[in-house]
Length: 268
Image (cartoon, rainbow, N blue to C red; front, side):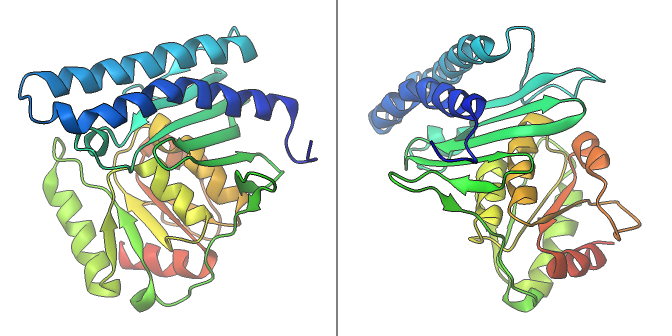
């Protein structure tokens, strides 16, 4: 076993993979169900519930006394827990697009200690443990993740999200500023995977509003351990990060050090 993979990290990765088995099977059936107006929405919700139930059982074997906080809940005050989104990118899943993930983070002592983001459709698993680096799982060797070194906004590829049940004008304002500066924006539908891709250098930054902690907690640790920077969108002083503000607001800017200053300035 490699030194950076602790026994508990191995258990967490295995728990996420076990829970994802049913999702992978269901995804293979979703295309046939899309022709049924009545059937596929309930099918997707059933998939979500199955993954959540299995995660509850498997994570309970690691920390039986830690509750699961799902994507609709706020961060609990001074309480250790699992921050879990069983199916981040649910709309993508429902439309047969292989861009979705299970996202699990261990929140302990007021900090994100361990994280796994797994896309079972592509068998891509990203993991991190505080102070030990971020990695993408490989068959023989795990790939160390590093954020991109890109410095110019005009050349940056930036991921973002839009949630239409909120005030759309806020999203329009943010996106217009980003598009005017970089002209390379991706709306992928999965916050967890966007952050994993920032950690891996596939995206240069991610900017989004009003996410719940379970959507992005695992991704934040991936980015931090890959050398990235994280800011609250309304943060005035960007000389240092304020992760507590980010976790509670859900308004996130995630990128490398050079671009971070420029994106924060752009969105003021």
